[in-house]
Image (cartoon, rainbow, N blue to C red):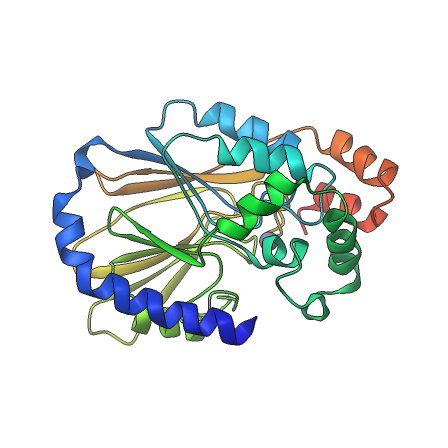
Length: 274
Ligand code: ZN
């Protein structure tokens, strides 16, 4: 899978680099407000609460990991795929749950949940997850689950962020994967990378001459110490992105996890946001 991912990444970069400027000029950025979701992880309670907050947007971006860990994979896939004007990339759990990623990359809890999910996904959900690309581009935003150039790597430090900045062909890259809401910024030509936690929410106005990597956090399994569901709203006319948090019925999900026979720790960590 890794080799395949790298090959697909190279093809993606070649394809998009050539047409990037032309396609951006043709878009109508003044019209678009985007709802940004990521790492839903089959937590339908969190997803529904977040989508209620995103009713007014024109389009949606999903940064992958719709399934894995949680008790409602099919429901979450059905809801996400029905969102209007959606651009969605695939995550490592999505791939593993359709047998397209080696489960030995995961810890025991994740592996148990992946095996559980594999037997429960409908053919339609499987087909949808298999159809998702590793990367996308939308309105001058690069969308990838984890990192560049390897889509399933993690960005957890300024050093790793610098590697992504070196590969970016847009000013802003949206990522997920770590379940930690934060943003990195680097002025063009500068070596210094500034990192800022958005675990309590945050906002940025994207300025000319600065590149940004933004992680809007996780809808269904936050790990930044804040158990509330995390999501983003991007206004492309104002070039403003906000990350917000919203409470959802964690206890209900915890009960479902235990009833389903999934590892109880997966429910306990939801209450802690870890
Ligand atoms: Zn995830």
